[in-house]
Amino acid sequence: MSATAEQRAWVTRVLGLTGNETKTPSRALSLVKLGKSRLGWRADRLHLIVEIGRLQSALADDFGQDEAQAAALATAVARLDKLIEAFSSELDDSLDAVLNAADPKERLLHIKAAKTAVEQFGALLRSDAIIAELDGNEVLPDMSVAAPLRNRLDEISAALG
Image 1 (tube, rainbow, N blue to C red):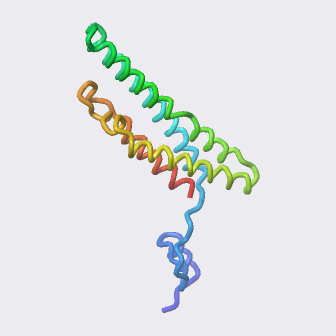
Image 2 (cartoon, rainbow, N blue to C red):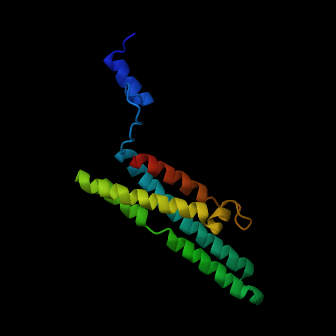
Image 3 (cartoon, helix red, strand yellow):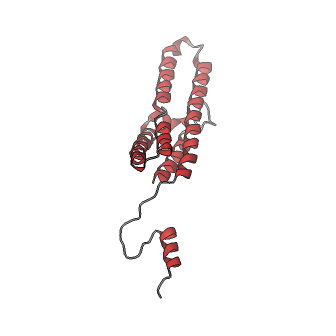
């Protein structure tokens, strides 16, 4: 049976098959999905900052009056501050540049920078020992920051194509 043009278009669109070609179809940039994911990333990143601040306050409340813990508390707070700094607005800025680029060649450069930033934040989420322990920690069991950030990076990566 020979497929109609509509059937071939459906197979290509839904299943990614393009006839006898063996190469995998490239994913296309989705500006709508990228715009939504960009807003979500910003909200998730700011949530991380607020939650780390909440953790710092809880630690100060629990250990701040104990002179023997003063140095350890200061070190812990400084480590958490460095973690906040690591989640800069670099990806936000890269995604804005992708979304605002008028020239396709310029947009491609911004996409490359955004993909690099996604990879860097993903590596940080996978490798940082503190981040690995934040979600559902003993001090603030309701804290959930790492998993939403990982999911958002996956969305952004898919939207970038």
